[in-house]
Length: 277
Image (cartoon, rainbow, N blue to C red; front, side, top):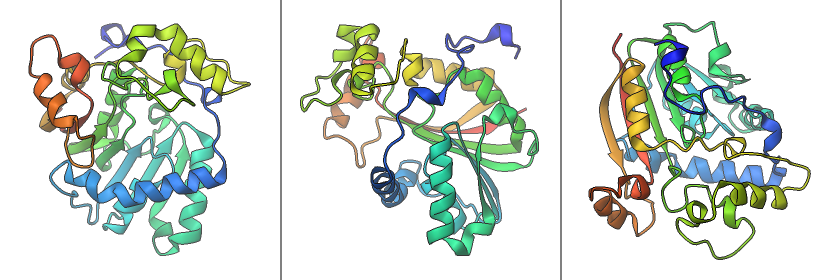
C-alpha cells in the first residue's frame, strides 16, 4: 500500500514528546507496579497469555516496560521495547537493571519509532502493544512497519482503550484536575477546549490540536480497515471487554450493537491479527 492510499487523517502528523509532561519518579514507579499487577488480566482478555517460549517479541509503545518484562519472564528469548518518550525508556532500562537482573540480558529498550527499526525485518514472532494504538498517528504506516518486522505468519496482539468517541475517549483531558468527569463531554465542548484544558493544567506545554495530545480519533471501523489494507487477517477480536472494566461495560457492549451507536459506545478493542503476505 502506498502513502497516497492512506486513509488515516493523522498520517502525516509529526509526533513530538515535548507535548507530554514528564511525571515524577514516585508516579512512574506506582504506575509501573500497577501495570505489572494488571498483566494477567490483560492477557485473559485475549483468552490467555501467548506462548512466548523461545520467541522474539517486540512491543510498540512499551512505556515503563511492564509488558516486556512479563514476556521475558514468560520465556521469550529476546524482547525489544520501543517508545517515543525518552523518559519512559530510561525508567524501563533502570527498573530492569535494579529488579530483574535475571532476565536483563534478554530485554532491550529503544527510544525509537518502528519505522526507523531496520535490523529485525522478518525476524519477530510477536508484536505486542498495550493501550497504544489509540495514540498512533498514521496507523497504516505503522502497521506496514509491523508487518515488515514480523516473520511470515507472525502475530500482532494489541489491546487499547479508550477509543476517542467513547464516553471518556479524550482520556479525561477536558476535565483534568476536576473530580467530576461527564461522559462524552469532550465531544460536546469540542477539540479546542479539550486542548486548552490540557495546556492550562500543564504550564510550559503548548499543544495546538487533539493530535498534539496523542489522540488519533480513529473509530473501530478505521482500525479494522487499516488491518485489512496492511495485510493482516483478524484472528480474534473482542470489543468492550468486561473483566476489570467499568460496571457499565456490559451496557456499552449492548448499545454498540444498535445502529448509529457503535462509534460512541465502543470503548476498547482487543485484537489478534496474523501477517498474511
